[in-house]
Length: 518
Image: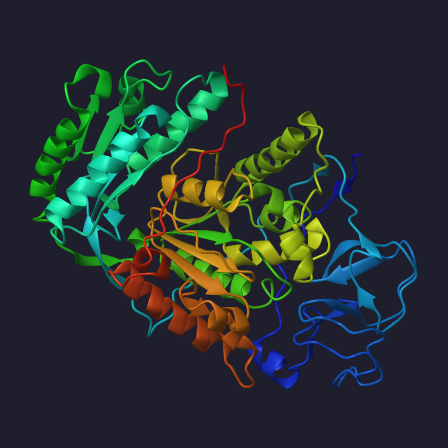
């Protein structure tokens, strides 16, 4: 089905002052015909002012939606100021709205029209730190860490890469900030675009500024040939790269350790220096969302995105299928018609990927999302894109590409936590902001700051969570001050403060496999 839709503008969420006055429920946008329960509501409980005329018709879990008005079957349910689906039954005011009476309205591709950029340039506020302590590389890029990374061309040498890393860590201890092998099962028996995806993703990691040295280990007979992988990494400082094929050396472990010796000798002299915020590259990701993610953690990250963009830093946002139903918000903020067309292609190509694989484009949210109160993909997407803030969209890049423009970049990638977070890292993100309402121990090569949407998760899993965005729901909390405090914390992380994933040594990569295996 193809219907013309005009790009919409980004919604402005309720401020924490509003939230503080309504500790039980929140109407996100004045146009909404639902409110969100911020804490469980008992059946028969009266809603707080200004909704005191309503009572909860059923027990409503936290994060779930309550009808503000009677909604007829087929009528749109509105949240964030946009339709998040249509009622599948008549709904009375005060009733619980979820999968039993709400369904998506998404279908196939849509025709869009460019009406010019509706976003304005942002100004970096005074009083916030405009610099951090980073590692400036020979190519001008700046890392937030100085680690030695071992990247393998093919899964056949995974164990060898891991053994080199293990022995090197024992040998060098605290000489540098860390030695890590990022292994994967691919590189052999891949063809065409699938092989190209793997090669470009690994090339992005090889060029990453958080790696002060990189050892690339190959086997020798794989499709992902070592020479072609290195050729796909043109931005590297060759003095900081060592590589070999295991089939061509006598002992791959000793060869690997000898290469590490040379790299560590160079890295020992690397020092942090004062660098402007414009050298930051932040990747924004949400994992395991709940009904509060779009009200607390994601808007908080969006405010950080705006601060970084205002400081001429780079902000990268991915999870293309979690833009479905909300893509017009980004299209309305496209810098020019070319970027607008790139967003249209990004969204429609990903929808076609679903269609080609005989999957509905709306096969989302996950079971965990639904438990947390998210019903349709439109609802999840409108909450998820809050991470992009309100900045102008300056660039659209494909999977495996590097972000090259300041401001907001949209990156092609799936919603899968590990795949999309790895893609953000390969795109150049030196710091990942990962929001979650459900929690996960996952971590990635770049420092991964976990932001909980609710305080109960932060209290329950302190070993996973770095920052509690649930604090935005406290009475009297000021949104601007809260986000500025979080920004200062992120400057500390960029300057070397360890994240939970680093303390727990949770680091891994995952590659998007979408082709034929021989």
